[in-house]
Image 1 (cartoon, rainbow, N blue to C red):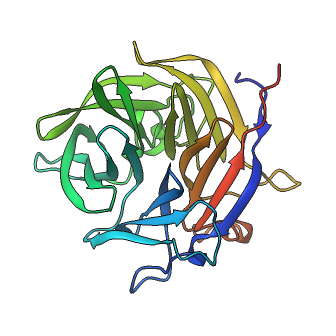
Image 2 (image 1 turned 180 degrees about the vertical axis):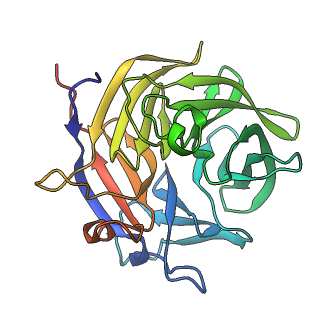
Length: 294
């Protein structure tokens, strides 16, 4: 079993529509990823291929919120990551039909002003288009830059097999020519009994993974020399109702703010979810991680 389960403490949250308007022709902001950089949170969405920039004060009156770059054609992005070394954002498209007939992820690159630079396929096939890579983070090891891509399903599988807990997988991607190639796989501890995996964030050697279905955050330590996880880590639940029911039903993105705090974003709540879920969907949330018990 994982270590004792604690609950995250909510610091602040607001609807993203308090800061930016939904894209033309759409009344929703299906937030799917976030990265904290400097004084801003950069947010991406399932329903638009464009990056939003929100000032970390989350002051509704501030004029520093807005969109960066131009909107591109397509449904949207699954996650966003940033590299200090390359000074680029990496934007994840979960999976598309590849010329070889399989479904593979695509990663777009843009500079810090949001200007599009290029795109590369990820050389790893999936069973279905809508169950591929769901989270993305960057890592610098020695002089090499890597992307860490989190599979949505357990053991990177789709359907019922992908929902069988205990098989969390992170693919380590290295740029090889015009492709991102999977060079190895990081296995999450089997004690992390998540039904799905929605986002990943790296801070030093600390790795955070959030699950939408399980409404939880796992925090562990990654060892880069052999791409392994040290120990079991710790699981933190997102706040629930007094009766123990989920309040955060659509969390998809996560990024470290400090060693003890993270920012998350939530997608549009599904129609079959309870009404309480819609109160916190399409939102940005800041949580504090409780101190570890000795």
